[in-house]
Length: 312
Image 1: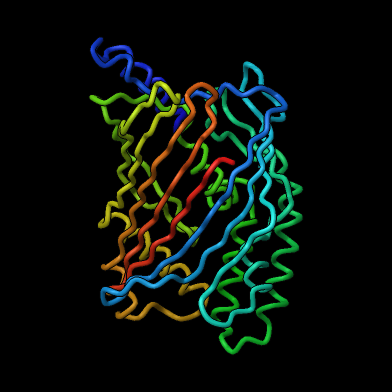
Image 2: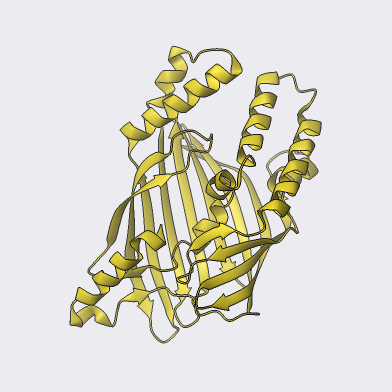
């Protein structure tokens, strides 16, 4: 996405008024081969129903990054998630939850970036695919014997679809990496928020969801070399509902029973929105902190998925 908009961003910075030129934020990595960075990655889920907000769970994971290549053509970075600490309400089998949340624990993904730092592709797909195949075997072992055979079949089918090709995995399985890197290449100043049409990958593998996205300048601390940029993504509800309905109809055919009228009606209440805040060290291009919240509403229930990342 940043690659497509890069030339347009540059043109905006050229005609920005002189009065605000010094406030322009240009997020550009200046990493060198061998550099490393460590972050704490916190994920939490909440549910809001009848005005009550309840926490569904939280995980804390160490993220280690290493610059494996830095040249005129771009970068290769090693992305490694470590052990997760998981907190869940009530009595829960935490070993099972850890398996479900950390299929790539201690497996370094090698990600190739464009020269402006935007995500290009996953370099070690074959290694990741092997881990994915093992993950599917583990799922089968955990889910066999469940009374909900439809749920079992759906979970396995969705996981198999995720690892069915490199392109699909990069679209759906590299969401964390793309969120973390998406600010790279962006140029924005106080007078010129950047708005553009975007898409949201369909988590069920169906048609993508049309959206409207926006970057906006928030602040610039020149003494600390820290810049803050806000980003929002808003669901185009009518078009997105059509995409979701087509997805469920395809799944219904696969599972052997049609959608009910109640299920179709529930889709009309579907809404998804994203809000993010990036704090960047503009001297190095490393993120200092990053927060992201996805809010999903369906059938009168709101679910919030939050990510909070802090550099150590």
